[in-house]
Amino acid sequence: MDLHEDAAKNTVTATFELPGLKKEDVEIDVHDGRLTVSGESKISSEHEENGYAVRERKFGKFSRTLRLPQGVKEEEIKASLDNGLLTVTFPKASLDTAPKKIAIA
Image (cartoon, rainbow, N blue to C red; front, side, top):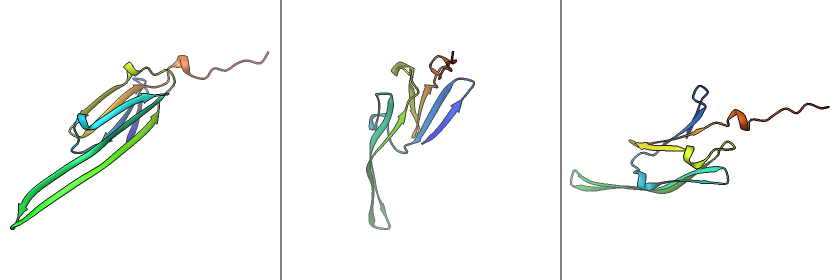
């Protein structure tokens, strides 16, 4: 996973390399301020080479969880999967939710 912050657009983009997976194989959940990307790889290939049957299988589950900035709503999260590259974009903490200094009287 790679994370990239775009200060100009006030967004964070997480990219995941998921070769061979389709969007049906990947799940994105948001719960308690956490974004979880999970899925299962079930890739199998078979061909003949020099009279031998060659079979390759890649099976396995994966999961990755990120803490979202405070105040991010589910509808503000965008995701796309293109050629095995999953891109998830969400806003950074806005200025309204940034820590505030309190003056001592």
